[in-house]
Length: 144
Image 1: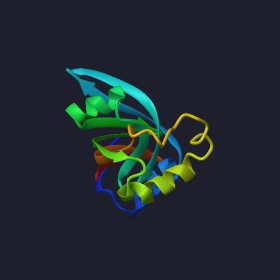
Image 2: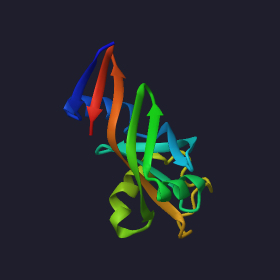
Image 3: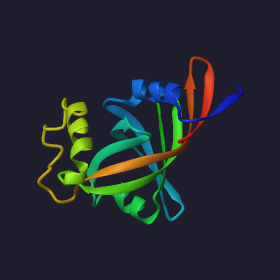
């Protein structure tokens, strides 16, 4: 199958929003001392990035602090990105994204799993750099 090399555009972004614009399960891979680790995270795609509410002391965040290059995979999409800890979820700079995430994650967000009062509850942004998206028989090689 031949791919179509594109800059992320209205068409590919619409596919990404359809698949990942609400609470989505995505595999997130990190590397620590040359050993890969992968886990499933709840995430939402917004403006060429995935956002995850997580814990600053978790293994994934410790690994991202050492090596911010990550990979994601889900729903006929794989990509590379740069992970960034945006800090505590209640920071003023995070308010707009967190409003969207609380709505997207409403089914489970307040069930005791997330403690916004804990200073280590943080927002992870995975800014996508490149990826491969399959849709309706077409492979899109995307540069974000």
